[in-house]
Image (cartoon, rainbow, N blue to C red):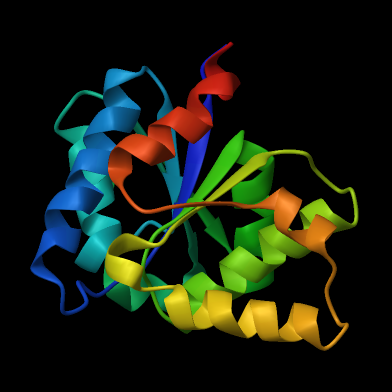
Length: 182
């Protein structure tokens, strides 16, 4: 059975030039391992780079896009499958159903929402899938500091952090995803 990796990330490139290459390398690595990509369906920014990395290396690319975001024009020729949903909540739910693990790379508010959704649902036992947070160039350092602040103030406990794995490069993402291929 082929495994699918959901990648949550920005539809913009951000301002660190290396992220563009790293996103492509992530997609390429997914394809080289025979895994499929499940993503938001867009062709721009880091999202587009990850999907290009999979597609250009003969991998499977599954897009899940809300109907109200069709102005982003998914490149259907570069998608193995395309699912249309009504809401962002439906998008997250379907992406979760189609995926065996989650990788979060730099992104904005939608990416934060996706991170916290998969983390919270893991915390309450809805799934036991691997969640990897790619803290490229320290992008998530302020968030990690805030999470520590929440822990220090008694709103989180150490076991909450057992549900996510924080890495800093593409190679470490794959080392954390390795168990899903077994």
